[in-house]
Image (tube, rainbow, N blue to C red; front, top):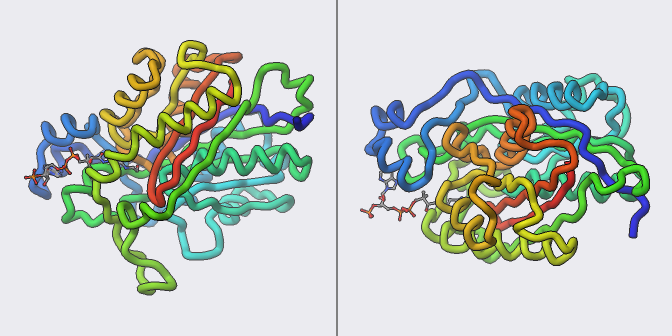
Length: 324
Ligand code: UT7
């Protein structure tokens, strides 16, 4: 057992100003508010302005997380940023954020696990803090999925939105951390499913950015089983249960997937933090956006046990359990 635990210090998030409603979409493509709400629970999503990049959203979320955690940028020596929509093919968007925040020490890199990105980034940062290599990390999920959508494809363009969320985590001696901090994380992937949710472009294959393509029904079919399996792993590793968690902050892809997962696990509906109605699916940003909202509105309180879970393209999926 490591003598170091990663303790969460604060969260922050940012949403672009422009809101795109289901009614707005229904004016452009053959869809309806009724279909979108019934099948997904989504009512609106935020869309980045022209010239507003993933890094811009990430910097704003990071600044808010720093302020909430009582840290300054100078305290940060590691940035792990999860995104599938980087500003550029390279450099990593995390180094743009690093420079914008004025951080000149430590390391910054991106993690690519699509919608599971935040859980993967959190687990990665946690592993580095536990080795003693770094002291304080900014873990960020930031996306501008609006830039990779095919706005003529009603099966996908109604689902996604833009945004960013961030969390500051700090290495603490286990005795000092007490019961708080990241207790366990479980990461999975299975590339045999990669053609069910992908972007049909890339630097090496087409030299284009490409558009998101998804066999929605196929993804849906696997989602609940994968999500619940990896949460059972978190429960088995810690002895915690659906009854002992205070909050469930799942990836926000579809209201029906969230509800079915919670029901299968026996998690009470009032413990579920849901933002899919107001944010849509913001991929790697969805968990830290929802987490930050629930911290700021007073739902998530110090000492409470919070369960995170995500599943997305690859497929990748994962869970994390932390005491706030
Ligand atoms: O975050 C990464 C993980 N991603 C997910 O978890 C997404 C998982 N998948 C889903 O959430 C759902 O599969 C969707 C919301 C994408 C689709 O819901 P569905 O109940 O699986 O619908 P479907 O794809 O089977 O389509 C049903 C019908 C089709 O018409 P026909 O073939 O039955 O006549 C579609 O053409 O709904 C039609 N349809 C639409 N109708 C109105 C598809 N998109 C739309 C739309 N508006 N936007």
